[in-house]
Length: 421
Ligand SMILES: Cc1ncc(COP(=O)(O)O)c(C=O)c1O
Image 1 (cartoon, rainbow, N blue to C red):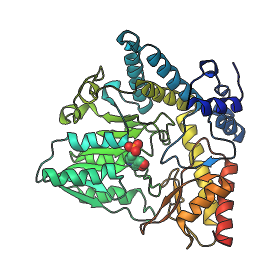
Image 2 (cartoon, rainbow, N blue to C red; image 1 turned 90 degrees about the vertical axis):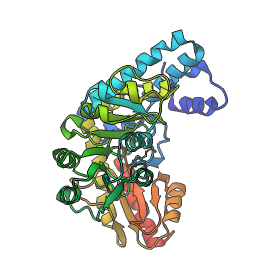
Image 3 (cartoon, helix red, strand yellow; image 1 turned 120 degrees about the vertical axis):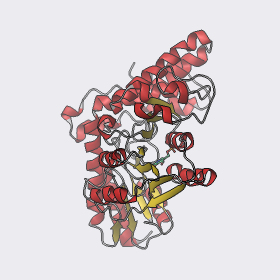
């Protein structure tokens, strides 16, 4: 049944208070094209799969992405099934759905399902590593400065408790090139170093780190690697069979456009014996490391099933096509912003050093007011960086954004730089 987007929005507005089963089919029509026909028309038709009104341009993928219709539908269908008959007998299929999701994630990351733990988000996955390794006084963890708190504050706190040390390597701005990171890691790693933890694409200014090379440097020195992929999974075409980290983490609700509160922890088979579970409860996964690390009690399986649908949605578009598209949108923003007098772009314009996040300081304008004006006057959603460390506005566009939205964002910043805010 084809029902218009307006009806669909009405359904969602209603659904807060009551669910009308006869309207459940009101999702946008399925995607009919593939990126082989990849021009702006393809991406405009893809946008139709998302609920955001056409005039709203949210460029905040590094924080939270919306889910497209097939994902929402999968979540709803499974939730309805579960809540319609919550018996163990009926819910047996949810276990199958969870294991299907594990296989989908493994295929997506090019590893084995035995190495996949389905977590609740990247924060949990990062903490499962910092809490689960046996580290003691005399050991050292080396991290890079722009790690997210779940991968820097967490190490710092556990270091205090267990008596090991954390060494933080600077991330200079602008991105000094891949060699800087490789050399910094080589110089920092000592006989005491047990773990190297870094972020694949930083959420601060969008620096992309040479993950394959850093993992190799650590591997050659017998050091474990934790790669935080929160802002890479679903944007960069992540191939873990090539990168070979020990641990890689990500969240469904970011660039994979999946449900909220689902995530992934990849644990390389070679270190399965080196990590202990930090949560011990019932309902573990059925294979590999998930049997030990995924016993977290009752889960929201419909959301996990929705994560698999998000992976399938992205796979239909193509990982390469998604990466290229997000990169071209960001390159458009970087080029446009760099042309505006007084704007300072923190993100490096070289696509070998940056990805799909651009952070810039709009001269002396008040950042919070600029962000508020962008949303109110220009219908553009963004994130802000306040404080003294590379302050500014952050745009992180993704496949549901358009080139017209990029132009609109650049024009809006030019306008505020000229007339104030
Ligand atoms: C690099 C990075 N790591 C980890 C996280 C935490 O992700 P989550 O809130 O999904 O746990 C974020 C969130 O913004 C992030 O950007």
